[in-house]
Amino acid sequence: MSKENNVMKDTAWLAERLGVSVTTVERMRSREPSQLPAHVTIGRSIRYDEQVVEAWITERTQATSANKEVSHVE
Image (cartoon, rainbow, N blue to C red; front, side, top):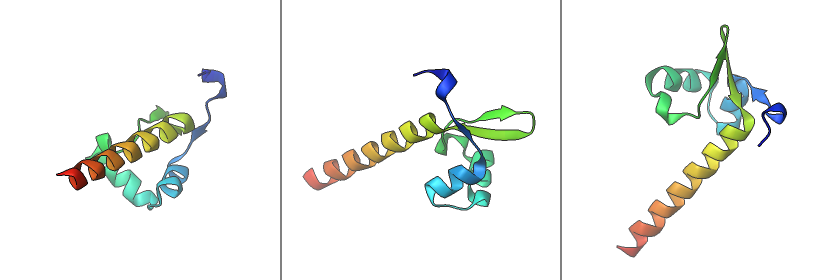
């Protein structure tokens, strides 16, 4: 993964990608940062690496799917 190709996105992009409001992302970032993908602070700006966000979504989707499969087996 080349760092030169990473695209940094803002909070509004993340909110849209996750289907929640900007306020929800900001609240989660301050109260439960572990519930969001890692971010970078540049001055007063918060940015999210698009590749990191996509990997985070994939990981959480797979974990959710695995949990559903386990609950159906029991």
